[in-house]
Image (cartoon, rainbow, N blue to C red; front, top):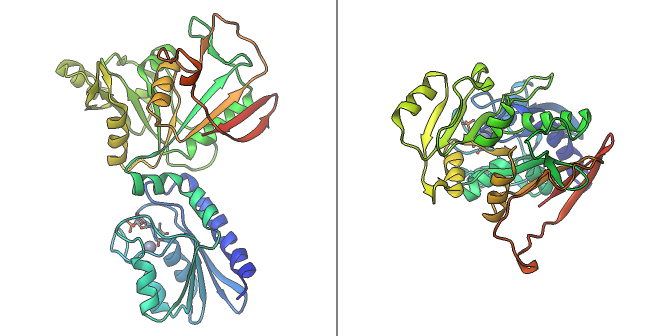
Amino acid sequence: MSCHQDERYMARAIQLAKIGRYTTDPNPRVGCVLVRDGVIISEGWHVKAGFGHAETVALENISDAQGTTAYVTLEPCSHHGKTPPCCDALIKAGVVRVVVAMQDPNPLVSGRGLEKLKSSGIEVCCGVLQADAHSLNRGFIKRMTHQRPFVRSKLAMSLDGRTAMASGESQWITCAQARADVHQLRAESSAILTGINTVLADDPLLNARVDWPIQQPIRVILDSNLRMPLTAKMTKLEGRSLILTVSTDEQKHQALKSVGFEVYNLPAKNTNLNLHAVMEFLHQQQINEVLVEAGSVLNGALLMEDLVDEWLIYMAPCVLGDQARGLFSLPGLKVMKDKKDLTLRDVRQFGPDLKLTLS
Ligand code: AOF
Ligand code: ZN
């Protein structure tokens, strides 16, 4: 089989994996195709944690998989999780060759799946379209390898780098198309993280308003002193809303829990939450991808602590003036050598606005 053919079938497996983009959390997105004599005879993808893995779904679609090559975007699992090992299913079905895009970073698997397949006589090839498979599961991979989620922060600014008027008024700087793109970002995120000041200013819902089926992101609010109003709009929504705090005020804890919030005490840094402890907590909650939608204080602190993997900045061609608020509160920066440099990765246009992707 030529490399070119392998890439073609793997590209299809990646396309299938992407169907699970909004629903597989905390599991990775995985796709699989089964090929015999140059023809795709079955396809599968992982839909949801607890449901069949991509390989099992593809195998279950056909009565005979003898002599096939399986293309899988992630190393087939070798462990008993919520479902039995995919390796065993592939071996039992008589698959003769397995092509995978990348090893599973899950320490319960990582390499064991490939070894098991090889030792049963199956030809194994790993690394086809690896970079594409990697970008599909940046959150899952970061959580497995760094015990942290993959963190993206979204900001909307004017041409002069302002995010809100001095009063806090910010609706709307960017156009409807750019805002629709943000709902897509929310939909593919495991959690949305914000600070209490943003909640007090905007009373946001922090849900993804899209017209296709998704698993809604978890809402996470950093609220050191428990200032969250009991009447916040998000209390009317289904799904989890988590408040992370350093306050031990038991009455406030109970009041917030009574309106549906989960409240967690985390370590402090000075009088605020320790942001490294926040990331560690999100990892414990099996959160793969975090979207930060916050103001200049939290974004400044995240930038200083180097906790954001990707910045998504929407820029609208309007001017808010120098009394308006900036992107990052960074009182510690005084001289040029302290400046924070980012790298521009992508630019695209939404209506009259630009979307900059930086890291
Ligand atoms: C595969 N194919 O489609 C997926 C895999 O609890 P479970 O049984 O769902 O197992 C989850 C783990 O299995 C997950 O952490 C990852 O290591 C692997 N995911 N593996 O062979 C799939 N979704
Ligand atoms: Zn599996």
